[in-house]
Image (tube, rainbow, N blue to C red; front, side, top):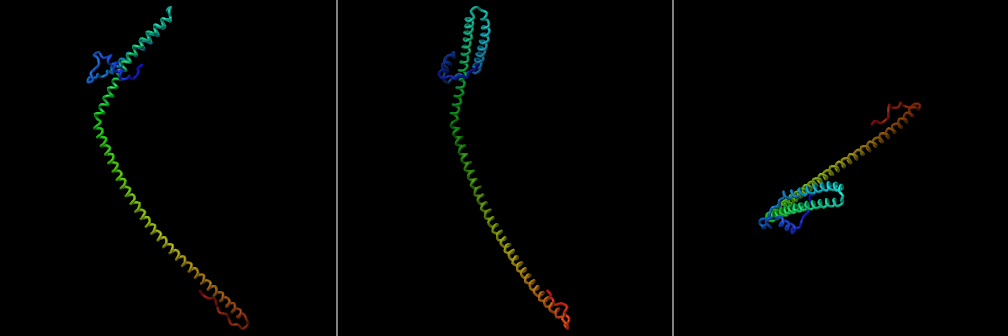
Length: 233
């Protein structure tokens, strides 16, 4: 089973020195870690563990056919432990190679960032200046839009007030006209009532006069009554 254990740099330096056939490399000639070798070492370690497990199973079964069963099993277990130690050593070497590669990439990344830092600072300053300019432009645009909106609202409010005033004047004029018409109608009604009362009064008096005349005519020696004494309208 592959492990991803990280080692301290001091242990890594010691292990790389032990693995290097020509001693430590110069600082300007740092070796590039061989990741293919690390993969091979992990694969070999896995094969050793698998073979050790299978061999131990076979030897354990075979030990039960011997006289000293426990000793036989102990010896088989010791051989398996030794094989696992060899596999672990291969994993350790592979982990060291992979750690060296990670450290190399990290160093390259840091060096690249350090080299690009001045340009990045310039680009960042330019971007910040552009963002500030854009923000100021947006604020000016928003201010102009707000001013236009306020003017439109004021104009709309003024128009509304003028329209409301004109509407109120029109409604007041109509109310006065309706009041005048109602007053005239009331006066006409009053005049009609008065005329009716006058007519009824004349008709009553004419009827009384006619009745009185008829009564006189009915008396002996009275003259004939007129055709009609009722008033005309």
